[in-house]
Image (cartoon, rainbow, N blue to C red; front, side, top):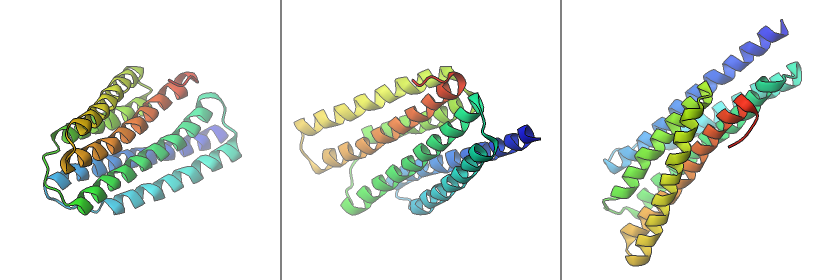
Length: 201
């Protein structure tokens, strides 16, 4: 009976994480929409993620206290709580990009930032899939993409050193936010390996 109740709780956590991942992708799509002149309520999406994370945390805490799960179940609950934080933080960085663009009001191409955004969005999708299905192949792909985003950020700083303009400065700031999102996506993927084997990558 306890096993069945634990499984119900784990499925609830899984459902919340899936909803959180979908909302996080919506936040990233909203950033892309900003460059197209469309305005989305990103703060509303981020608030939704915060509430979902609190719900997941409550369920996870109850499962830990009531059923004292062991091995992979314990790791899954711990990792799910961490993943929910990563997804929430990605939404907050999306809001920071939105705020930057609104305050500066610049009309720049931001071609490199747009390409980096596509990479980060792909990373988040792969990272969540890696976590849900404990897919270590996808974990490796996410790690490689994270390295690519790190390189994009370094390149943006080097361009800033060569060409000090408002556009290059703001693009470097945007890519910095994207680089932080990338780190969170890598963290999500790393949790997949932790749940499966107990080892972090």
